[in-house]
Image (cartoon, rainbow, N blue to C red; front, top):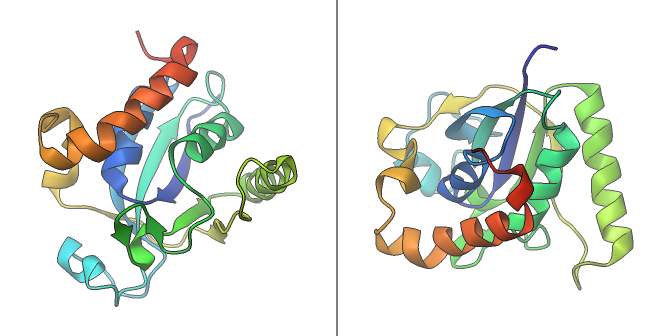
Length: 178
């Protein structure tokens, strides 16, 4: 089967990229921006909160190895989908929880997954993750790509990203790349 693409926003794209890079069946993860109205935005523009874009990762995966639903299960493990426009200390619309679907099937799976997680009551507040069709994806600047892998001892990486990666690795040990 051909590879598929998923585009997910769950706060800082460095965090999501660091996790999905380690998931078996994922062949590529690119940090970028989508969901806004400014063409070819820069990181600085997105951080100014006026572009409408979210920080996202575009995940290329082999659906014979890892399903879109599997990607969403990881997604809902590594961020708080109940906080509007924020993840921890990162605040602003660029940090919103969002699934930008590439097909009607991805939309269906995303909506079913959100409904299922809400019904389970895993969080004390309802999920606010937006489910929106993907329009244009803009790749982030080169220095954002593989950020955690290249800067594992940077403060933000140690305090914010490393605990998310550890949580993911513990929960999904059998799904890690060799």
